[in-house]
Image 1 (cartoon, rainbow, N blue to C red):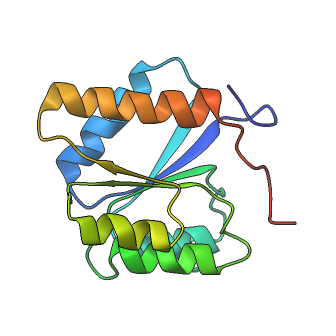
Image 2 (tube, rainbow, N blue to C red):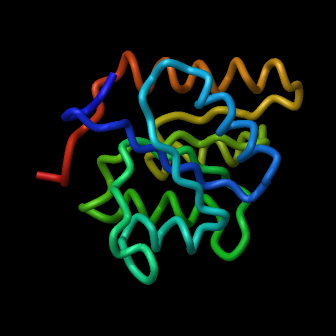
Length: 149
């Protein structure tokens, strides 16, 4: 699937290098045409999304995979800022985190996360989870294009 003849742009906001590498490998294996950008903390993610600092030429993502437990600015704050910004709020945000806490799940949905997925500890299950996210969000769902109306 492609949007307007270009690759699907995914922003992965994750501070764990092992999870970043694994997610990148899983996404490379699939047939869906996509481009992955990684932000290692919440401040970097927001700079990239707002195209500030060194990210003035960053491409707007079509989908955000967001960890909750991040340095500098945690994922809950990042999610709140994304959904409060009229220029960003239509970008689907998938919470992809190790937290199984009901409080985190409820808070994420109250901040308008599009879905909440817990990262499995088991490698095989992690692969299945990332592939299922990609299958659903990049092949089944129709993603918004461009800026907010």
